[in-house]
Image (cartoon, rainbow, N blue to C red; front, side, top):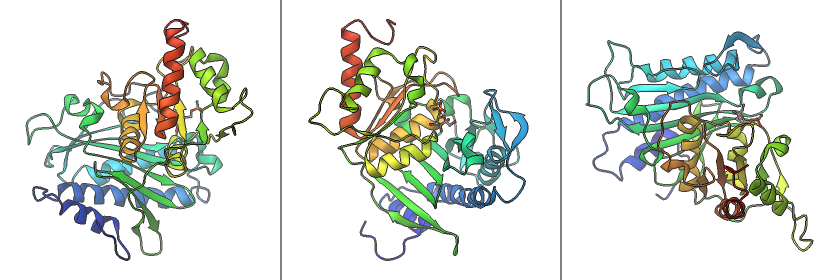
Length: 345
Ligand code: P6P
């Protein structure tokens, strides 16, 4: 689509849907409801330092992590914004152990949404960029009924829409519906998300790598060899990569998406499945990066081909520019062939 002048998120979604005569407009409505929730969360995130919303809410989430008030605020804002529009039949959130049903008196729609309401929340008090991540599927259970765990535990290749909102120096809504990746920057003056990044393509050549090097002693050999390669330690003729790690997945991946780079949260000797969640962190980010021309693997296969078993299951992730992911895949496989694989050690 040729974009002329100011293009708002709702108008862009409708223009995109016009390409599909069979589209009912439900997806447009769903994304517009989510955009409203994002504006409300952005308002709170941006004034968090000014009101007593910082600090712990004396609660812990399902994973035993301290939940800051903004986490819960974001979670409740999204549930309230999305549970009555009639487009969803069930939801799931990082902040909720089980499935989130649609209220009994409301219509059960044909879509399913999984989300991380506020990823990177441990950075809230330091005013570091944080984000919301979402993943949307068509339901697989009979229409009209309440959604089920089966609707939620679908393989990543079945996603119809995935995206994130990064709350940073500006608030940017990035999504894909399988036809490219597009970014919209919030203009707080008018309260609209305006198209700012049309058809994002991740640079194939990367020179940034993002990983928590504090875990070095737990890494498997293949990863150690790959990082040494990136640092060009033995190859004076080559410029080393730059290390950039914010510790907020949405912020790290957003930067790498625009500049080129690889983000890794690998399995290691302490965390055999890494740290990040398949259903509402890795799958949506994988859909976005693949649509932008990049790759996303767990070290052995495409993230989006992993058959989910549990709602909150963790998977290792290597995601970003194609040539960087190809190279880490080579080093991991080489270590495996030399008997230094991740399973051997
Ligand atoms: P570590 C934030 O807590 C988060 O879930 C992701 O946003 C981030 O990429 C990762 O954990 C950081 O984890 O172990 O490096 O602090």
